[in-house]
Structures are given as C-alpha cells and as structure tokens.
Image (cartoon, rainbow, N blue to C red):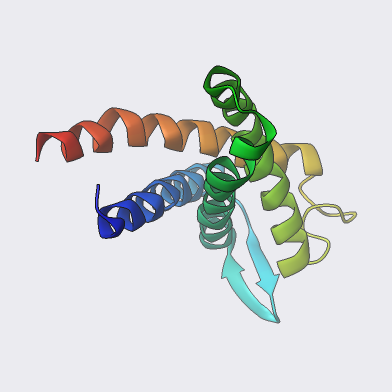
Length: 140
C-alpha cells in the first residue's frame, strides 16, 4: 500500500464515523449549540467532533497500542475496547469545550448520553466502513 493510499484510508474511516454520528444526532433531534458565539446545529457539531475523535482513536491504535502490547492478539482486543472509549470521551470533552454547559451544565444533555453517542457511533461507523467500503476498495 502506498503512502497516499494509507493517508486516504486513515481519513476515510473517520469521515464515515463522523457521518454516522451526524445522522444519529439528526435523528435524535438535538438542539442548536452555541459554538464560539454562533448558533450551530448539534448534528453538525457532533458529526465533526465524531470524525475528529475517530481520527484520534485511529492514531492511538497506530502509534500508542503497539508500545503497550507486543502481542497482536491482545493489541486487537485492546483496540476494540479503547477506540470507542476514546471516541466517547473525546466527544464529551470537545462538546463541553466548544459549547460550555451543553453536556455537563444544568440544561446539558448529560455526560453518559454523549459518551454513549460517541462510542456507539464509533462502533457503528467501524461496521459500516468494514462492511461497505473495505470490500469496495478490495474490488479495485
């Protein structure tokens, strides 16, 4: 695999995860969030944060996990647990940073719900990516 193909693959999975996050939030019917003083649809913000958190999880998988566990069998298991956890935690942190009070405030959605959204979208996005885009790439 060339370096360009590797970069495209590293960007494609987070894009799919961001799209899945945005679709889920759009269906849930989230309200607008105040981001840096501007009113922005919550699905747009969560989709963007979902893509960024997925990229962060992939980077952790590529660069951090090989140093923690030299055994490939355990590295795959750790990755399957770590990626959704990173995505959920990043979703909470980023939304709270971008729109203070939207997660943990009195009128906030709640940390557990946002973390579950981030982790669930990571798992669903991974499934969509592996079931539809990976076979499509292999056919070329």
